[in-house]
Each structure stands twice: as C-alpha cells, then as structure tokens.
Image (cartoon, rainbow, N blue to C red):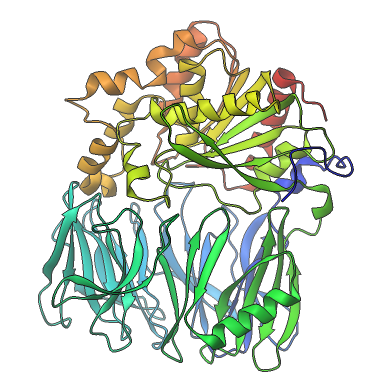
Amino acid sequence: MPSGGAQATPAARIPLRDFFRNPEQTAFAISPDGRYLAWLAPWERRLNVFVRPVAGGEALRVTAETARDIGGYFWKGERIVFVKDFGGDENFHVVTVDRTGGEPRDLTPGDKVKADVVDILEDDDRHLILSHNRRDESVFDVFRIDVTTGAETLIAENPGNIVSWGTDHDGKLRVAGTSDGVNTSLLYRESEDAPFRPIVTTSFKETVAPLFFTFDNRRLYVASNRGRDKAAIFEFDPATAQEGELLVESDEVDVESLSYSRKRKVLTAARWVTWKVQRRFFDAETEAMFRDVEAKLPGFEVSFTSTNKDEDKFIVAATSDRTPGQRYLYDKTTRELTLLADVAPWLPADELAAMRPVTYTARDGLVIHGYLTLPKGVEARNLPVVVNVHGGPWARDVWGFNPEVQFLANRGYAVLQVNFRGSTGYGRAFWEASFREWGRKMQDDVTDGVRWLVGEGIADAKRVAIYGGSYGGYATLAGLAFTPDLYAAGVDYVGVSNLLTFMKAIPPYWKPMLAMLQEMVGDMESDEALLRAASPVFHAERITAPLLIAQGANDPRVVKAESDQMVAAMRARGVEVEYLVKDDEGHGFRNEENRFEFYEAMERFLAKHLAAAS
C-alpha cells in the first residue's frame, strides 16, 4: 500500500476533458454464436453500438442515437437490444436492431413507459421477457415479447404490490417479490400455470433475495441475512421456506453475488467487497482460467464480462484505481489473450494517484471505512481536501477508477470518500444505524472523517470543500448548514434540499415502497419536525460558504424544485451561489458536453475558494 507521504514525482497536469470524455471503446460483448463482437464507441458525440467479426474486419455502426448515449445493450441472437431514455427522465425503453443495422424497433413504446428486462432468454433467439408500466405507471406487468415483430404476450399482471420478478433456467416466471413498504414477501409457484403463493414474509430489514434457481429448477440460491447480521449465500428450499446449505459467508461484509456456468451447469464463484473485490471459487476450471488471466495482467483487477454460448471465448476487463484499463478477448482453449481496446488511451496511469483504504472511529464508537486519494508528488501535509460523499445513500464507494477522484487529485486536492453508516455491504446493523439519521449521525460520520484527516495533519482545516451527487448533494448542503465552520465551499450535484418535498415528489413506481422510505428517512406526518430539522433549505441562514449547484431539469428522483428552493433561499440572503441547470438531463449529466461544462465550473469554483497547491 502507498504510504501517507509524498509519492515519487509530481504529476503532470492533465486536461480536464480527458477525465470526462466518452471512452474510445467500451462495453464489449460477444455474440451467442461466438462469431461477432459488439461494443460502444462515440459517433456524433454519443455512444453507439458497433459490430465486427471476431476474426477481424471492418466495424459497422448499427445504431444512430444522437440525443443521448446508449446506456446499455446485449446480444439477442442476430440482433442487438439496447435501452434508451429521453432527456434523463429514466423512462427507459427497450429497443432492438439487426446486427447489420437498419431501422430500430421500440419494443416498449409509450410516452411515460418505463421498462425493465426480466430475462433475456438465452436459449430463445426470438423472445425476451420484459416488464413495463404502460397499464399503470406505479406497477410493472410482465410480457413475453417477440424482438422481430414487437408482438407481446402477457405473462403476469401485477396485482399492485409486486416489485420484482424472476424466472427459472427455462425462462418460466416462477418467483416474485412483494412489498407493502414495511413487509416483503417472496412469492413462488411450481409452474406458470399455477398461482403465486407467499412462502416467506419478513420485515424489509431482513433479506431473502433469490439469485437464481438450482439447475434442476426445484430450489433457489438466495442471499439472506435472516437471523444474522451479514448476508450470506444459501441454498433455499421453497417447500420448507428455509435456508439450507450455507455456501459462503464473510465475517466482514455481506456476500450477495454468485455466478454459474450456463453450459456446464455448475456454480463458478461468489464475490464480495471488503476494501477490494474478494472471491471464492467453486469450480476448478473457472479458477484456473481466472488465475491464468490474472497472471497475464499483473497489477490489474480482472473480471469476465461476456461470453458466448460455448463458453470458450470471453471478454476480460482489466482495471485499477488509476485507469479504466483495457479490454481483451480471451480464448479459453488456446489461453490466448488479445487486446481489443484501451478504454481511455489519453489518460496516463503513471500520472494518476493511488486510492488507499482508511478507517477511523466515529464519535459514538462506530468504525467507518473509506478511501483516501492523495495528489501524486505532493507532501501529504496541510493539503486542500475535497470530501466526495457518495449517493444512495444506501450504496457504497469501492476501490477502482473514479474520474472525479482522479481529476481532483490531479489538481492538487486530497480526496476523502466515506462509507458512512447506512452504506451497503457492511451488514444489517450498520445499515439500520442510518435510519432517521439524515443530517444527524450519517452527517456526523462525514464530519468526523474530516476532523480525523485534520488531526492526522493531512488536511488544511481552512481549505476543505464538500461535494457529492444525489444523497451526496444533500450531504453537501447539510454539511454547509449544520457545520458551517468546517467547509470553505460546497458543490451540490442533483441533491435533496427539503426532505418533505423530496418524498412527496417521488416517481409513481416508487410508491409501493413509500412506507419503507418513510421508516428509513422519517414519516412525512408524524416526523414532520424531524424532517424539517434535517432539511438544509430551512437552515439556509446558517450557510456562509460559497455554493455551486448543478441540476437536471428532467430529474425524476430529485426534482428541479429541490435545487430551485435552495438557490432562492441562498440568494435571498445574498450568499454566493452558482446554479447550473441542463434542460436535457436528469439525475446526473450523461451528455459529454454537459459533463464538461459542470466539471469546468467545479474546477473554477474550487480553485477560487480552496486555492489548491497544484
């Protein structure tokens, strides 16, 4: 691990846009027959899908999106299926196009339709199982859809409380999850002709999450924390509704990921995250392949991201904390590893900064984990600092390449990322410790991280800024309002300012989980005083530090009114606030030119108010 002192040589100043440009090529995927490669690359500034034969040849662009990047895609026989939304509204449609191009077909049309893929049906080249909310904005029905004609057949109509659906290995809809906001139930049926029946009901604080069926389609593998703090992987019998064999657990964190070979019908590996990714292999063949690639790419975190039906060709992603890395084609038979692309060849990894894990103890004794990235070549004393608070808030920061962190470090800032209480993966007790603690103990964890960094002599107490998106934007506003002497500046990116209006404006499809959200954050009626006390907009008079706010006009999660009211409150008092609004964006800026404008504004803002030593 790198030490807290100065690193070898000062970093060269890298152009801002090099951190936030669209990748040169990324998201490679192999066709099911193993004959073709697809990937995303820029065309007319937007990420579009390209295809070429695996054996080599000219690349063919098969999509022509010009409004927004394609957010994701996958192969479906000889076709490509991709998802797109409109101006950041998150009403994602599922669209298909032939691998040779041509006119795309929207499989889920409708002005306010939001769709999700339930099962890509790998053994059926013609159909998908999708869910969408065309009938009722608040719930999702399930359909089998023909990707060539768009014809859809209803499989299951949502009675109003189902929030998740799952299939067996034959593509039959056999499990579902319900929520009344407080309690969750796992529903199961023996076949698609049988009715669903509840087999497990728990508080939302307990998880029995189905991952996939056993290979005989009779039992399930689940991630469960029932009767324990850390989630672990079990085999689960629907007949008894009990966890059976324990496959893997960790004393430190939740284990929630399990993979398998579809061809060989064996479990391959479990995955969990401490400060980095950890794995346990169940299959010698998979482990041998992984170790072979790992040995060929020393110093990189490797992962297998795509394969063909024969499982003899794989896409390998090689990444680290200092680079988005390279993508390779691995031939399992010959063990040959072929470079496909460097994701961002313009970024010199040697000039970027190492990201190291840190821990400290919060004021109430809770151990908090996080990451510290120090600017390369600068003594780690009295540095300007940007605290980068993650969104969610029920998510977590992980080790790996983060363009924001690397940009800030390249400009001379130390960057502290905090997995405050409520961050996921650290067990049930750590998660529950965040309930009704927005602006209180959750914020204290961030505050205590700053004070720890000052106490270590790394941070200059007079040059600390706070920045984050979504919940991180809320934490920025809360930090400036509730600890006004701690921060010299703040940058709020699509953040919540008023917990009362935030919960009233949630999207229709979140309504089934509103009671859960109110238990975790606070009830809009019985806890109005608590929510008001934790809402920065009602304490704007305490904010003295300059503030930059960025907002997407079409954001369905944190609506524009959240930022509008904060800006109005600040300007009414004559406090400096810059406000950047993008009419073609939602919850975060996806379009390259908008990212450039936001981060250029941030660079100027931080340089003005922190005077970074770069």
